[in-house]
Each structure stands twice: as structure tokens, then as C-alpha cells.
Length: 322
Ligand code: 8YV
Image (cartoon, rainbow, N blue to C red; front, side, top):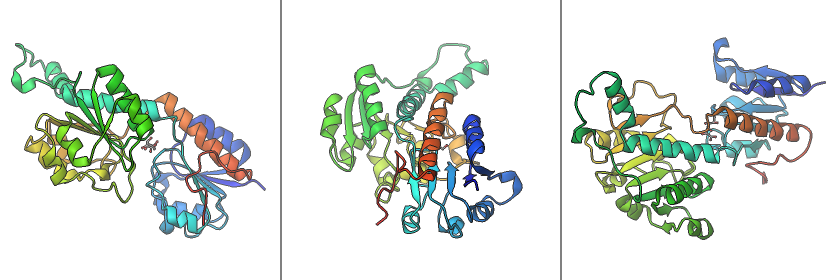
């Protein structure tokens, strides 16, 4: 009998076809009703799960009996209750590396858009308001040679540092749980305490994983430390920044602008951020290019197949259950 695979979000079409050739595939479909109920039902006799963007925890996995793996089409795994998966001896795999460069590109896209007021100036131009040269209200910020503070010098953080250092001659500061001497040396990056980094940076980019120690890392007190001309960029997870405090800082112009790809609650709807000209808001597209999403899907597929065929997947999050 074929093993059963539950596809819990949209997935690359070719990967879906490959899965259907070897496994009994069931797709969770929001149009068919409550997603968690479908996961609960379909999970009972499933061997593997593949997808992204859904919370998987005891509530919707409690009936699984033979689940070997949850293969996430993402690098971040904050959507999964790792201790529950460990307890049930279910592997969790993810897709690191293949999205590093494109996510770093997006961090710079946000940094530059927010610094140069791109969205509002595009709108202004298209509305036919360009009747004379722009005034100080429309001026942006210089980027070249400025100070870039990176919170989280992992793979993506390092790729952002590389762009800043080599491309824009920036002075790089970083904050991380531990010092990263080898990576830092490549970009002449200086290790700083968070408060120091926030005070000294012209651009602060959040690239840290979401975990217990990074949740709400940047709140009102931290935002107050930033300079009035500074730009804050978040390509990590929304919950690293207290959104309400950020909205106040942007409203009161205690910082210049923010470039955001991620939010406390996604999809972002009816947010006060939409009213703020100095908030550049993207819909969580850090890895959203055709090439990268394809590579992520392939990697997730390989992780899944390895587990279903009894091999240890290459990119396991939880290697040791005990
Ligand atoms: C997307 C991400 O959320 O990989 C991650 O952790 O945040 C993004 O790439 C993910 O691919 C789900 O679509």
C-alpha cells in the first residue's frame, strides 16, 4: 500500500506531480472548510506532511499515529511545536541555504525603498503631482558609507553584511547570541550589545530567528534608542518587533522609516501601518522568487522522501529526540 502524504499548503506543481506518482497524496484545501479540522482528520493515517505557513502543534496533530516527518518548505520553523514533535518522535525538516541570497536581496530592497521613500514617491509621480522639483519633505537618506547594524549574523545576516560592506562601503555592526569571529572578519563587522547597535546604526536590519529570546526583542525602549534618521528593516519574523511600539515610533517620526516583510499576525489586514507613508510593507516575500521557491520545494521533497524511505533527511531540525 502507498504511504500517505498530506500537503498542507500550496506547493510547486512539478513536486506535487512527483509526489502523486509515488504516494497517496491528500491536499489540505481552505475552500473545503476548517483547515485545522482537515489536518486533524487527514493526519490520522498520514506518513508524511509537506508544506509551509501553518501552525502545526498538539491541537491539530494529536491523532497522528504513524507520522514520520513534517517537511517544511521554509527555513524558519517557529510554526511548529518542536517539543511536541520530539515527544511524538516526528522528524521536522526545513530548507536552509537555498533562500539565503534572495532574502538578503529583499532586505536591501526594503532598506533602499524605505531610505529613499520609493513607494510614496512613485505614487506621487504617478498621481501627476510632480509639478516642480521635490522639497525637503521628500528627501531620503544616504546609504553609501553609512552604518549598518545587523541583528542576527546567521547565513542571511552574513549575506546582508556582505552586500553592505562590499556594495555600499558600509560600516557593519552586529549583535548575535554569541560572537561570530570568522564571519565578522570578512566584513570587518564589529560585535555590539543590542543597545549600542541601536544607538549607532543608520540602518538596523533584523535577521534573527524567532525563539524565546528574540520574541519582542525590539519594543518601545529599544526603538527610543534609534536615531531619528534611522531606518529599521525586518525580514525575520514579525514577533521580534512589538508592532504597536513600531507604529508609534513611525507615527511620531522618532525613526525615519521601516521596511517590513513580516508581521505579528499574517496576512496583515487593516493595519495602522497602511496609513503611514514611512512604513514600506511587503507581504512576506523574502523567499518568493520562482527560482528560490522551486529550490525550496525540491529540498523539502527530498527531505520528505528520505524520511519515508527510511533515510535520515539532510536538513533535519530535530536530530535527537531524546
Ligand atoms: C516563507 C520564510 O515564509 O522560509 C522561511 O522561513 O519565512 C519564507 O521563506 C516560507 O517559504 C513559507 O512560504
